[in-house]
Image (cartoon, rainbow, N blue to C red; front, top):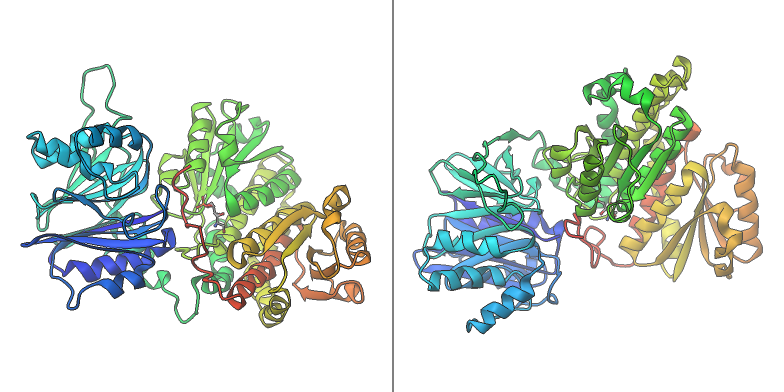
Length: 619
Ligand code: M6R
């Protein structure tokens, strides 16, 4: 939700900032802006729209500056408009912000009573207004900035600069992600690593309640910052200053490029044979080693009465697949919950139980809150996460990284299959350790997992046919997705993908639940996508297909048994056969492609669907 960037060094700042914003545009894209400081004071250019719109309003040649800030917005307070675009500037202090200032109304009322005039409807504007109000009362800029921050309640990652300190840039974190990049004599900061991968691989991940002071050619200064959440403490002792830890990232700038594809989503769909394998590579030959590395002891595994998983969106659907896999292979009951619900319910998480969060970004506010709540209850927290150094990975007791590489498309695809890969390996390892899976069965499963890249390739080969099917559904007002057992979450995921990028209403249902209500929706021509792999539920799902057909629905079947569906389904999309527990890997591929092509044919920007942002860092 919103991307912020900052640069200070010897380069011309504006091209660096615009490049960084372009790479962060997946975080929000309803307005954009930059601020820079040079001998002539602070300059600001901002506009409603995307980074291309911002480029169009910039003067040519670009103003020269060695320091600046940038922002790409996902609106929370105040409609998308020029006046609400960041940076916000008052009295020579410019601020970019990702997050929500929860007490902005009280602060704004106080400032208005003092005679300040506001130029936007945002929560953010209170920050430069507060700083300049303290400066007007005689405080030095840096003091004023620290006092203003102490007034704020909520979550924020901030970039701040002032005409009174033109050689400095400040980065502040409290609840919203922020990383600082290090180059020779120069610094970058951004909401997410891909912004500046082309310039540096060295990053420090900021913690809550920290401030970086960055000045070109000088050492970066990292300090603990007093915020509304951490200012108290009755010991009277100030905690020690934080230690600067710089991490070398192994992602490349190319990984965050389209590399010949028209869309990131398309590239990410086609990367899945590789990203699934990358995720499993380290553990495939010995999944038990994975448990050891994560510090999950045999005692803990044998003592587990149940396991909890919490996640949001697509990661939640991976969690549901994980539940089926763990329950069937390890016989451990698994409770799966949407993180935003988990965090506010009466938690029945036992001490020493295992809690798993699943998150591509590692920054989803609700998932982080759920993980923290489970940790407070004494559970061992494990995160399945794609971003090294993200908040979830730093705060969890153990991390199982998915190795999907940067996922830029807002609609998640390769992260989903990578999450399923991690969960299936976890299920196999737990099954073996609990004595529920004999060595032969475990080998059959890992053998099938080793073949998964090839099977996904085969599923991808249906692309041209799926594109034709997509052309036939583009006019639909609504669609249904049905699946059973471990493929019910795949129906949910197919429906979510379609909603997100084609804007066609879609619902995922367990096929057996149709007769309890949703069958009333079926009318002549309604497209109904049915995931129907050969196996114990094939016949039952076939009956559901008959019920849909009898009411005029148009059945699009995703199956490894197309011959048996001839004359039953209107369209069949073939996928290869695999172990029943692993069938979601191949079945989700056509559903991702169907959503992608439908979105493209309808003329939508599938990489940046309306109203969405890649990382939901606010509640
Ligand atoms: O980064 P996370 O995995 O925590 O994100 C969770 C959801 O916000 C995310 O999966 C979202 O639903 C995607 N837009 C789905 O395509």
